[in-house]
Image 1 (cartoon, rainbow, N blue to C red):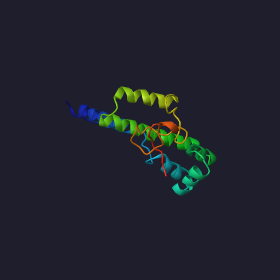
Image 2 (image 1 turned 60 degrees about the vertical axis):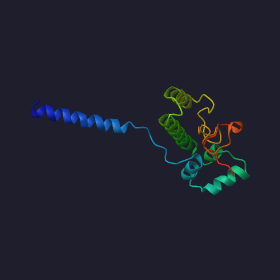
Image 3 (image 1 turned 120 degrees about the vertical axis):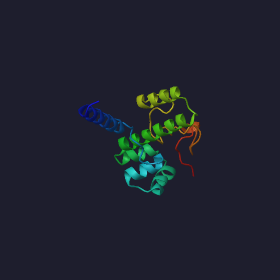
Image 4 (image 1 turned 90 degrees about the vertical axis):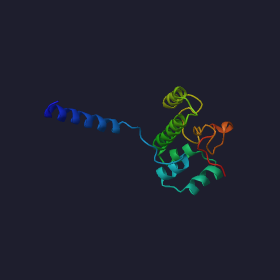
Length: 145
């Protein structure tokens, strides 16, 4: 291989690696919907707990009141996606089932309706701290007192 061919091959490889690194999905910025809502709205977790537990507001309602519903929804969806991918990686969820769940999230269908925490609690698959099936989810990111 001559010098020019090596340069072209090396440049092509570098460009391909750069493009690949840009296509990695966006990582969630927060660990759970409560932290996300606090970070997005600038409220403390204690303020959010007060609105939720004492005033009866759901997390999505607090986000909506602050004009931050779309940002909150996007963050919670990223959190759900990360949980799903983690379950696939550890082997407790098949890739096929994960793809079905991800499709349901994207389409707003399925048991969580593509909703946000408080509206449809997260996808913790029974491992998270949550309200469970009777309150709109199945053991997701909920927060109990």
